[in-house]
Amino acid sequence: MVRKMVWIAVLCVFLGACSSTLLAQGEVDLLQKAVALLEQGQGEDAQKLLEEVRLLLWNQLPLRVENVTLIEESAGGFGYFRPRNSRLYAQGEEILAYAEPKNYTILVEDGAYHIFLVLDAQLYGQERNLLFEQKEFLSFRYITLTPVFEVFFNLSFHLDEVPPGEYVLVVVVNDRLGGKNTTFEIPIMLR
Image 1 (spheres, rainbow, N blue to C red):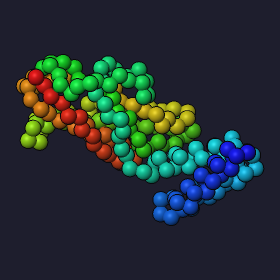
Image 2: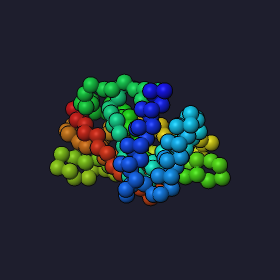
Image 3: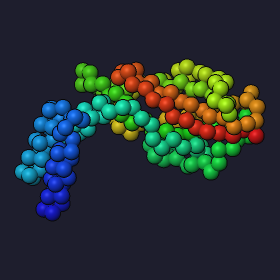
Image 4: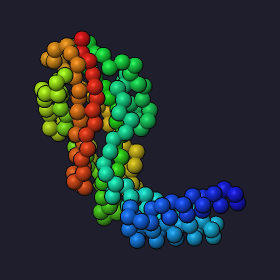
């Protein structure tokens, strides 16, 4: 009972905080219905409504990338990776990185959920001069029967012809379904 009251209180605070400009009336109505369902002891029905609100918010918010990490080996799954302790690489050594995109568009069409992300890679020198660019070096297209919010990138870079020095790998993430994009940086050193 106490746990249910805490959830109701959290939803009410969230509802009050979000009812201004972030949420449209439809999302506010869904949140109010979820609170009513929780008060009636219908937690599973409330959860379904909250998942609808999550998808609506997810699609409205700006695309971003979290947990960008240099890694020792390819990630085995979402959040399952072994961080590398250094950003220093030998010339020709494979550079592996992990990243988690957030708020990419999840398009609902004919009962299926679509995600379509395309990544571009850029290499910048110490003076922020562009040395190399590869458009569409990774294309990620997913069609599922339920929305997927836990997507990750296993990134691999081969800089065999690049001389020793400090560099910044810039990855541009393009959301082809929602027209959103963002970038993230990976500073590295080659010896």
